[in-house]
Length: 252
Image (cartoon, rainbow, N blue to C red):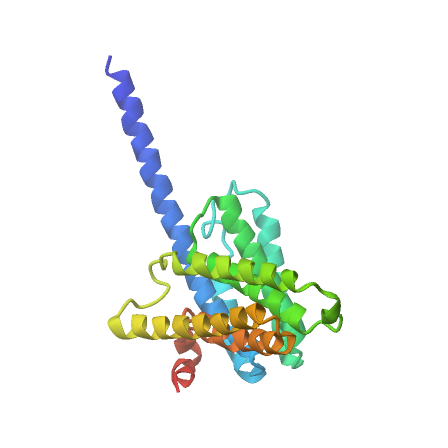
């Protein structure tokens, strides 16, 4: 009659092991993304020398995590291929930065980021804060791309409204999500500065909605372009800029 109790204890032991493993994987990914963000930020604003410098800690951290003991277990589907792809994309980004090709570097970095997000999905990691930030970025650039489209006059204005609604949903998801432990230093000063960057993005978003309500294509284009610097400054708050001795230059 005691056998079911043993099963329960064993199941509880497995659950504890899995929980610890998930926490370990999540922490590894946070450290990787904190090294990733400075490279992406600098490449986005055209500071390619700084981006190239920031590649060193990013590649070093990725090399540290290439073992199947990190991120996911050995049974994870297509682990070897994922490792190969991420390494290839990072190397491609590094080469592009050395050749001062920001556009190609950003494409390579985005591919590496996608592979890691897909790895999280396959590993069952949910509610990862930066995934909501990356979704916001996708929605934002869709708005920016449309605002700069040469065929913009052929679009119905309700399409702008739909894009604005998707962007607003993505932003609400960010606002309603909790920071992963280790993503930022949750000191009062740090939280105030993060909230300040959130407020700046919210203001830019309001300006976009006002241009949509006014059905003013020119204002819409200007408001869309203003989203990018606000987003990048918000995203930068989660990066480890200390590793490249450049973090405080952002806080001018």
